[in-house]
Structure formats: C-alpha cells, structure tokens
Image (cartoon, rainbow, N blue to C red):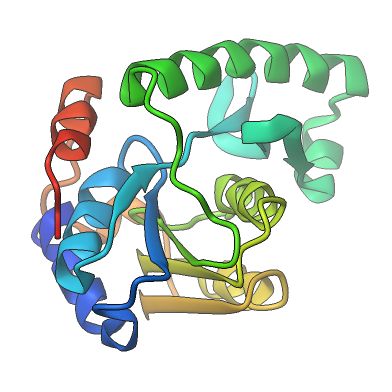
Length: 212
C-alpha cells in the first residue's frame, strides 16, 4: 500500500481516529511542514480544531537527514544517544546545531501563527500528527513539549513509521496510531506516490482554513 499524497494519508488516518470525532476536548497538532497537510485532513475528519506544533530536527552535519535529536517549543531538547555516538559529536557541536535550529523554530512559530496564541492543551487530548516517522526524534520532542502543557492524553498519529520507532514511542505517549509499519521501511517518502516539499505558504493557507 502507498498513499497518493499527504491529503490521502490524512483522510485514511482520520478513519482510524473516529473515536475522537466530535469531542470538544480534542486538538489536532500538525508538525511542520509535512505534517500539516496530513493533520488538516485529520482535523477535518474529526471536526476538531487544528494548530501547528513547531519542532526542529537536529541533523548530523553533512548528513542532515540523520537525526541526532530534535528541539521543540518551551526549550525542549531530546537526543538519540546511538546517533550521537555514531556521529562522534560532542556537546558543543550539538549545542551549535541546536542554536541554528532554534532560530528556524522561532521563525516558523511567528510565521505560521502570525501572533495568534497556540491552542490550549490543558486537560485536552492532543493528537500529534506527522507525515511519517523514521527515527522519531522530532515526534519525541513534540511529545515532550506537548506533555509539559498538561494534556489529559497525548496521541501520536502517523500514516507510516519504522516498526521499531512506533514500538518505542508506545512507551513514551498514551497511544500511537499508525497505518503502516513496513518491515522494510527505507524512508517515509517511499510510501507516498507524491511526496513533494511542503512550503511555508501551503502551511499558512491550511492553518487559515477551519477544517471542522
């Protein structure tokens, strides 16, 4: 099975989350940029409010697709010790990467929200959505940042994930909903027919529409 595009994946994912539909305590949070088109369809399918939840991957220099960790709102930072050891990075190098990504995190938060305050998560069910999970570093940072805001439940919802990543995340959040955990994962984009880049303008356009 492959998804046509992120919208198709979000529609299918919404079908697996129907127990949350029509509930006043549910908030759908899309990880920028690729997670927002998926989250838009999830929010629409559940008649739930949509917000963006900025998180930035900390890529290994020269191999940026490999995540040494991630940062999230509220000063959250998580690292993958195995990747840190493999890449032979010391703390000062990770700090330098994090400082650069923090600037982009702050830029995204201002650009996508335009001064609008984030949705309240206290005592609500927060559904964190991305277009897929490889190492899961960015989603882990998002989960930590969301949990710090006092939600009743944190749900991770993705169309596809590496089997080991999905399994590990189940110990870190209240629930993981994933449509595909292929034995030969390769990469998130391999499971989409159209996995083109998502630009800032598309994210802003989707956030400006009321999915419900």
